[in-house]
Image 1: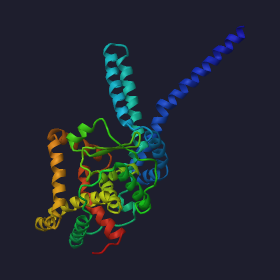
Image 2 (image 1 turned 60 degrees about the vertical axis):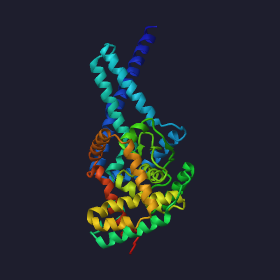
Image 3 (image 1 turned 90 degrees about the horizontal axis):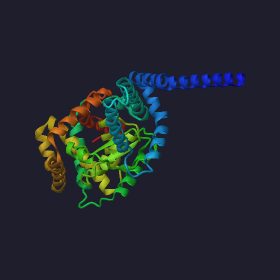
Length: 368
């Protein structure tokens, strides 16, 4: 009997030691290893590129296969649970149900794991080499003549693609975008299919509208969120942009390029029109900086019905926009992008024109 009790005590000690060892590995060693890997990716773009090309597709497939089965946003669920848990933990700390030291330790640990989840699930894409490096091309030298010819060509295509009173078929649009991404996957260097892409609405859509956000990608569960406040003519381009994020493209300007290439090549009338409508808007913004006179001439070449669509888009957002919230959102997102090595911040949206020139002039060898 004495030997039996001794054996039980020894067994209990071994189990206790194993539990403590496992706990130490999970709480200390594993997060340190993962954080070190993330740090190396941030310093060595080649490692980040390899991770996105070979590991990320499996992660995207796993996460999107789960989130794709539910119609609501799992990001919203995570957000709500996090807010409730954080508020509850503060109340328990004030009531002295848990010690302040334990609260700090728990919150810090959860933040660390959220950071790891974010980067391992998708965020490492921020550390990939630049677009021209991945495509093996040199950035183009400034060519005003070529750029002006490019603007004229896209305006001509925009006029031809105009759609009056488009049928806003969300499923049809999504199918058309998927077909285009599948067809152009190799050209765009994306690992199609890379999981599923199911457009969703978010509970923060009202806030998105007030800050002028038309969509966002939720990396935690690999979800595409779209703001249905936007007009039908803007929806396809926005959806194509968020899908590009899901394929492991982090740069906003690159996602705009992918959206342009995908939408403009589509056989779906509304998708194609949306692509040219948004692309010309970016081109005109850059042309206005180069030559206000040529900008005014280019605008006069646009079909008056299309000009009305531009005005309708602008008016719709301006009426809903809250200037203060929008300014705060811009500053926060700008800091977020720069923290993740997107040095141009929100200005990277304007870089889409440079990428379009690279795509047309160098990759597609277009001569006007």
